[in-house]
Length: 146
Image (cartoon, rainbow, N blue to C red; front, side, top):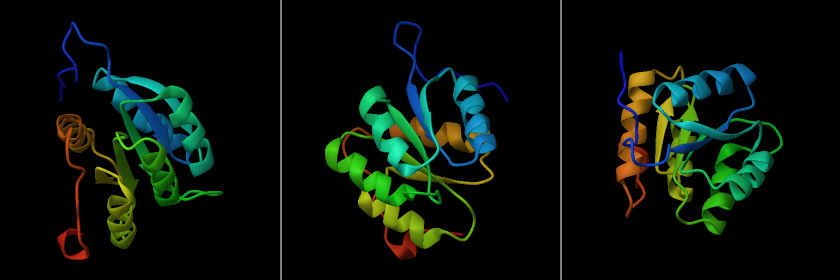
């Protein structure tokens, strides 16, 4: 499948921060971001590193794993959004973490994608989040489907 670049020729590339404790998962997400014409502004392996990396890189979008050592993704989302309300964070979660997804959305994440991540699904979610300038995604436990 071929993807249109996420920005036009006259606009800068969309900058991403990729956060996952698995190096393999991070590299896989980075490859997808580049496939979409995006730029990897930074990578982090836990929530603490994600908070620091967000402050120093100010990416357009964060792809954040939920389950990580030192600090979970949900707690990192809360810190980042508190300090940077404009942050656009997409949670990346494994099957069976619907309650965590709802918690992350309530803390300020804009959307989520389920592992294993399919490029076409991630691309659509990123497009949605980039066009969602006003209201973050709101969810209740009943709205999240498995």
